[in-house]
Amino acid sequence: MRKKRNDRNYILYKLTVDSDDYIGLTVAVGRAYLRSVKVRVQKHMSRARRENKDWSICSALQDADMIQYEVLEVVRGRKAAYQRERELIASIQPSLNTF
Picture 1 (cartoon, rainbow, N blue to C red):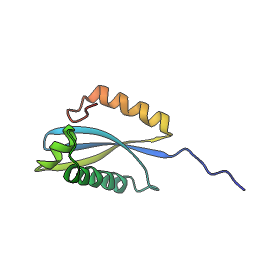
Picture 2: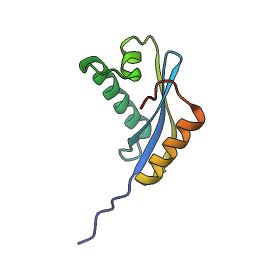
Picture 3: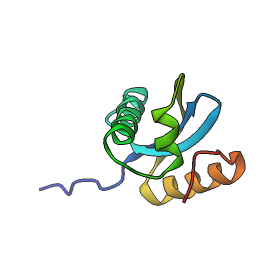
Picture 4: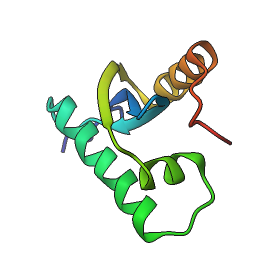
């Protein structure tokens, strides 16, 4: 029996809430990259409405007038994707990424 692959495509995306940015990472489902990001953004919005988190992304989504998202990059492999996410956060410095 053939061994199942354990490396995947990861999508780096930018979520813009009004004028604030958030850089995120999600797993690609097939080649439907924009759809994968849309599902992830819906999870962000659901979590912001249902959970009482003190995160800047949650509070921004609760009060949002305009929400936009876009695919920045598709990266192969988990380690490379998380490294690239940190690089993008350092270079873009989005206001909604808080740790």
